Image: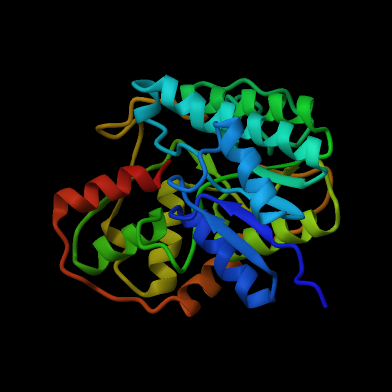
Length: 301
């Protein structure tokens, strides 16, 4: 029998790329993972070479610029990686008849709607990062209407020690107070649930914009308190605050909750948090406070 055509995953060193590779292995899906050094998605010649070399049936684009605050100071790089790269992939996939999955964010919205955003709601990003994702959605679907574009929010998972929940629990377990925003509401998303649902949509041949987030909405302060209670660490050390933390220069939507008018595919947030704590071996490690503060700011996207 000939070898099955693989799924090509970009972003080999990112948490999302690694999660897709891990779950593809668990599901027995033939795949190939490319890092930035092997495939620059904004280079048409490099993309063409990769498609001819690996002959994938689909591409999962898990590459991209994720530093929301730094994007305000480095818009050129942000747009190259988040907008130009996916557009180049879309054009190549359309020519070769290869399916494509790429990702966007709740930050394409301004947070003024007051109830969960659906796929058809008008976008109005507040930040450079949000604008790069909004333009990526438009360019990808213009070039390849059959592409699948999935928006998500606030990822956390058992294989990443730098996500918001992991950092908060580690700080609380060490007896350190945690400041968390009470005026920003999000829909946290458990990475294993997200990856499985995204792969199902890709395999089923779905296209267009989809929202995938665990059902439920919380402020960052509520998420920290809820996780602490489930992990049996001192939740009274969570200090709710209003406004941006030091180092956060990009504006965030006050209400960035994602709903869906297409299908409810994701479990509840409560269920996801319980499984997260059950599947992850919780460890208390000595940490440098400066390093942990940097991780905390990054985890809040």
